[in-house]
Length: 224
Image (cartoon, rainbow, N blue to C red; front, side, top):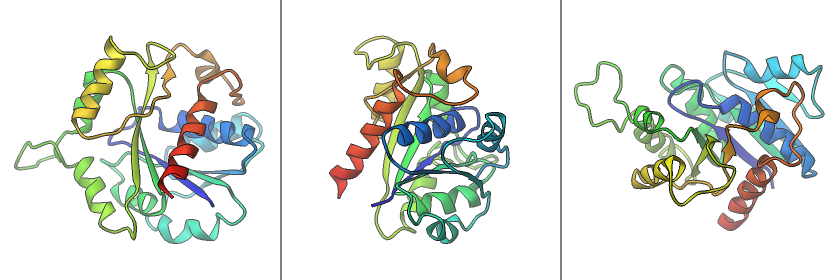
């Protein structure tokens, strides 16, 4: 069974690329064969790959709108395909293809109400201000194109604490996302983990990213 994960959000700068790179490394350290697909014109994942002189697993650049047709030709013999999806607001066609392919959609969000609010902005020039399109309506649109619904989960990153909290800003944002109808992962990625921010070549022992990958793998198993 190949696991297919897409890192996606409305806006750039939310931690998609960093999460994608380290999740691929964590999957490798878990004994899996990952493939990282850099579907963003910014090429952050490929830049990380080149800066490190290569990883122990492959990265391919494929910023094209028909990923749901092309990726099945690449995932043979791979255990996990992780896609760094470009921001929906500017690259909806590429994002749509990625989400049609991936069975799990991961929405990285920082523990800030500003981050939550901007996820629900209306389209530019929209006549109404319901705020649903650009993320929730986009998700609904792509779900209708799929044979089976995708699993959607929020990942809290750059958190203030290394574990899930019951109070404080991390918990407040978690509750706000739940109120919007999202399921939020138990594993969080703390802001103060310099192994993510400063690493040239990713390493995940001792970080939350191994638990992050394990939680995703367990979610997939529970939905089979």
